[in-house]
Length: 89
Image 1 (spheres, rainbow, N blue to C red):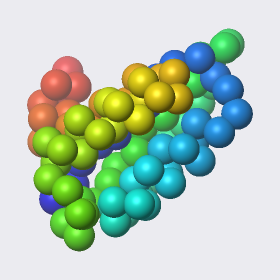
Image 2: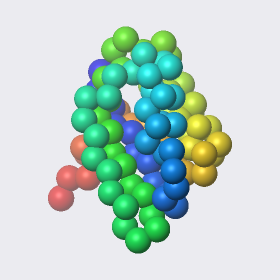
Image 3: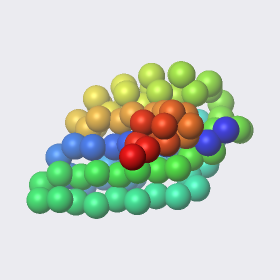
Image 4: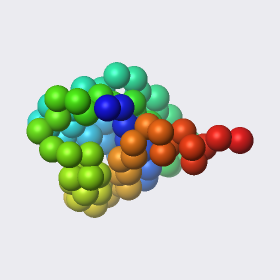
């Protein structure tokens, strides 16, 4: 199953590494990534594949939120269908 990971917060060294290592540790594959820095704010969106993950999507979302709090950013994990439905114009 595909999901979308959003990461937003003040820019600092190591955000991409922390989130990527977190996902890798749970056997989650990053299929696509887009990131930007706007003034002092970091924003990243990742498309991930969770089929081989060690945890369920809901557990991944909970752990992602905890990881974000630990590194000082907001990490949100959503099923791809929910993300797409929320962002349709």
